Image 1: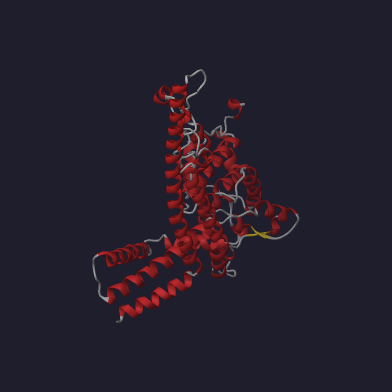
Image 2: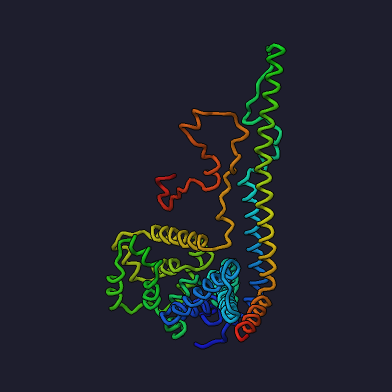
Length: 130
Length: 295
């Protein structure tokens, strides 16, 4: 029953630089989309200058003084909304920056994996016998 | 058509995977695998300490780097084994079936699931397929977790089944059984031939198993539903174990999903919006079988 044995080495290389990279990139793409979802980027961008939690004061039937007060409250509400959403967008950009840096570093290591391992090994041996 | 089926485990990736898994899951290799993990943790701790407070001698740092290389090498091979060799993405089940229908020759072992390959590896490595009987195949399958799951739910004890099989000779048409299993696997939307598919095929063709199901008043559809259930669980477990699995992310709308709504103090106090959670997670209810009741 002994037949020719399948060789896994070429399969490893084709998987490492093909299927696996696609899978990892797909994962990181979804991670970035998840980050945008977590920080509600779409909501923050589309409603950046909207009033906070629809806390809008109508000016219908109000006196001039009350109108002025309502305008001020509406502006304040928009300002609060803008501040909160800007802070969240800033946090998103901050988190994205670190994650993108990590992804780039990860992909470089992934591509240069055999060289990284060989380099570490040679360096380790040099240090070990120093 | 059976003549076109060959069973050569060593010529297939899944056969090699089963072979390697049998080798590495032995007790001899357990300390070696533990050593790789320990080297990884040791080297990372050394690097962390070296970066923060401690100063290590060059040989210690060198040793940490060598151990890190071993650990990273192990991780690479392990991810290859789990991602490609053990659970390959096979999209050729239908293609294999068509090839066989057209009269082409196929090594059917290449479309075995990992668990089926592991269970039947020794059997097909040591024997010509023509000499393997349905009894041998069934006995090989009975050692798997899949069969334990299926038989427990059918109310059949594995030991009693093995005992009752001892006096039985079995049938010789193993290629026919496996060919039929392809059709069952396709009907069950499996990516490969699973342990349960082969068992169903045996139950459909072998008089001993036919009688057993008849005596227990078990319909073949019930068995098929159990196999479907089991495979769904296995698939889910594989996905959950996979590290780079994008399906693990749950999109819920995030922290600002209700910032566009007005204040609803009482509504918020006594209720919660589960729309996005349901969209993302689903209801988590799945009914397998009971077609008449759910119709």
